[in-house]
Image (cartoon, rainbow, N blue to C red; front, side):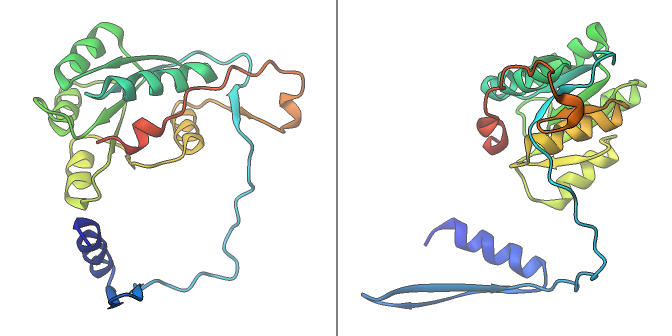
Length: 209
């Protein structure tokens, strides 16, 4: 019971399916859902599983990443994650503070939370875009509404990350847009390399609003 089932049914219906429930008092409940999907090609590429990201490969520049989120715990953990692999990272707790730090620090990448009070992430992204920011602009959100994602992209976001997401995926995307290479646990090139201390878990960032 509750809001979760209603949201689940709404999402299933958005994908051309439905969610149904059967229940018997004193016995229990059964839930099932359907959705429309395309058949996968037999030649679909299977990505090689990689180990944990250890850091940037040696001899590469230390690029700047600005994280803007009104939840201070989320900011500190994201900054810790990026710093642990070799990026230079700073955080801001509001859209207004993010714009001010951007102008003073000139980051290479901006990660903007969309669900902030005051100046929302979409407005902050729009101002950065209109001011001619040279930073690569990204957004992240816990909202699954496509309309919000489309607004963020229209405001200049290259990509919108949905919470929860994987730390490795986020690091790979940041490295790719900056033209950097990462070292992974188990890679021959990483043998003998000093691995940075493990970053704090991003659980709060991934599940926060």
